[in-house]
Length: 388
Image 1 (cartoon, rainbow, N blue to C red):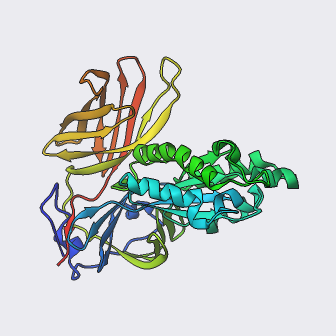
Image 2: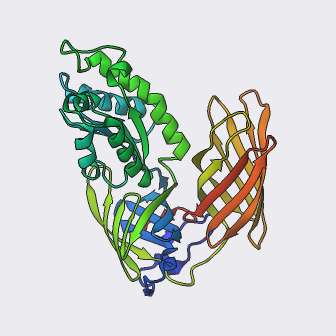
Image 3: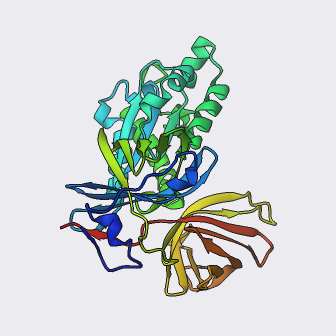
């Protein structure tokens, strides 16, 4: 295996089987800040650890196929809930999770929607089975609250939904809560007065579609994506991985879309090239706006090459966001940001400054209206690989 010519070289020591192993003491968690690679017949998966803060770990995930072409990760969505998720009274293949998957695929998204609805579940039961129903590597969860079952059994829906949402967001999973399924179904209910008709399932899928699409766009799922996890002793859980750290290797399992697969990741050897050039990805956070706009964060990425930084992405309502700037050899960064409408007019200009240090890009600035903006990005892998 050799790296393809790209933004910068990872170094042959990382890629060759004959590279010497490195040992390190886990007492210094900073030793994890490296690129870890899993090789297989189907291609390469690279997990880049960019920062460790206490038991919190920040990183990025990228994949290449056997031909050396970078590929997007299949977006894993779990539909969690009770009988109006499982599809009582209609074929499971016609319930709204299956319809939503078809709608998303028709729009070109590589997605899989798992139906994790169980008839008669309360929100307490959903909470109890949460870890088992939402596998590692899940990007988005749609949560049907089971409120009807809760009312009949005297269960506190609001408290359980808050706990479920908190636990999922701690795993960096986007959560879309459906509080009143019959209302989402436009009243298309079976004669029992509780369960959705086939038309009701279609209505729910249609209402969820734009929310899921926006979540995919906001979080940059399906390509290079920033991920976070937790470190407990020698055990690391991050993105789709559940791993045990052992010197220069990590072994464990990875969620591969339909099942867990055993994995071994190796750490690149010391001495590999270290350059500012590369792709950086992570959170962009906007402070509260002067007109009452709430603070919010979303995912994005940009490329640093030859002293320049550049990036761009599609925003809402036809708006395109562009950033460009200069990167000094010492790591200093100056970035200009602007948004552009479909008619070509520009607005929302901001200037940011910051640094790139140890694979971490940190920049802060303000828009013309005083709203703050900050980047908290980690360096991902440098370039695609070719298998040989």
